[in-house]
Length: 180
Ligand code: AMP
Image 1 (tube, rainbow, N blue to C red):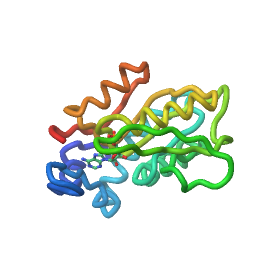
Image 2 (cartoon, rainbow, N blue to C red):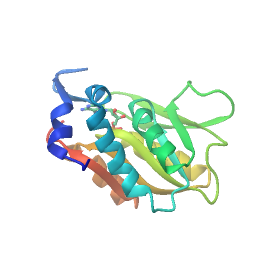
Image 3 (cartoon, rainbow, N blue to C red):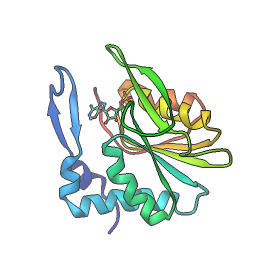
Image 4 (cartoon, rainbow, N blue to C red):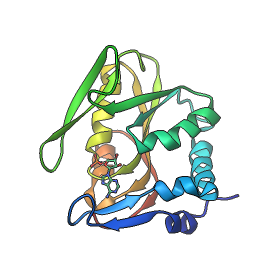
């Protein structure tokens, strides 16, 4: 089964004005009810990374986990978690980043990755890029290298993916949507 962008887009649902007015929320939950679409996107990512030297996937809370665990299983590499602050036990490091209103923070356990590791950072969607950039900051702080940042969806009008690329990290996404 080959990757069919039109089919995958037809499965993703857009909810207008959620969670706040003006936002077009790209709801990927129907993907997990559609085995064909889930297989297409999983296979597309697996094929991209199967012959690379990535050693780990660092996946971002929470929808990113659902796709990256399939990738980690098929690529036979470790999956490590980047979670919202306060969710991970043990010794952790965290990084704050700016939201439109206020701040958020992501966190990793200090033994997740280390020197010599080449890490793929994965999330479901790139909007402003703040979440992925904060995750990349943690990975570098732990001494590992960020190989690439990948997401299912890019919102290029918010310029997050170009901000990530400008920081020297390659970006790979499967789908793009105009607007917020
Ligand atoms: P950002 O840090 O601005 O790149 O935001 C990325 C995170 O926010 C991802 O984990 C997404 O799940 C979520 N997100 C932001 N905007 C949207 C949107 N329009 N639809 C769905 N999820 C979004």
